[in-house]
Length: 180
Image (cartoon, rainbow, N blue to C red; front, top):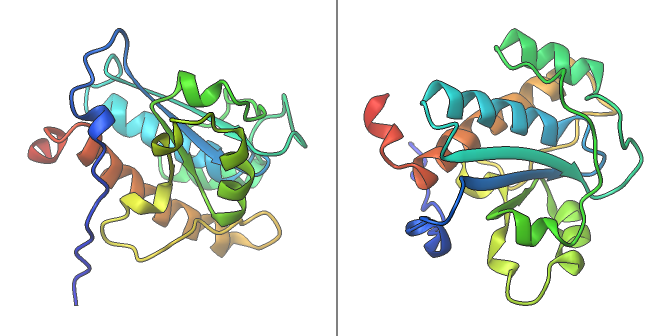
């Protein structure tokens, strides 16, 4: 049976005509595995669709364990096999002003959401979502943390992230669906 999701409606992005691009922030715990992978995947999809002037992507972590470090070598290796270069990214800590600077703050799981929600200023909670809300084929409520697992975990992250990023792009830039 084919999974037909109801993707989120993002009224605050429907008529984004403000200066600059729609800004999307990917968030996981340490900003070295899942969020850099999602950042790299969406950034490449945006570039491939010719939308780099309309959509900007970044990533951050709810915890400052790895600030300034590059993504985990395993995440980089698995991402590179699928054409995503994460090497220029450096981990940073999620801060309250990110909710003002970004139109969407997309967390990977419930724990990330629980840490991010208190940082979100009143009136901006509509910007905080789970990346998996945008999955169209993969049925997932969270992007599982592959850090302590093996190869299969990083591949699973990529499968979920790619599906969710395609769905997200379809919502943020619906015309991309017609180009595929």
